[in-house]
Amino acid sequence: MTMNAGPDDAPRRVWVAGRTDIGEVIDPGKVFGHRFSILCVGVHFPETGEVAYYDASRVVDVD
Image (cartoon, rainbow, N blue to C red):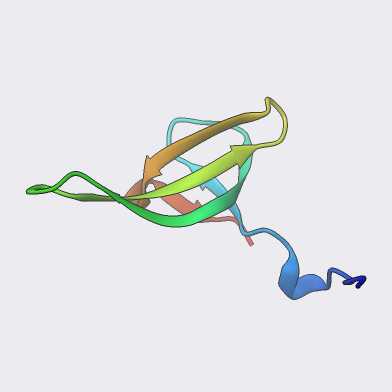
């Protein structure tokens, strides 16, 4: 089965405070911690190949 990626299938592009490059969300939300939990977003940075999780409050949509 072949699937064509349309504009709705494009990755969510984001900017993260403290970085100059644009990333793509690969995990829209993961909760870390127990008593004091933090919602984090997994972001892939294509320019460097880096994948990192950031506090959701630091992630801003570009598009």
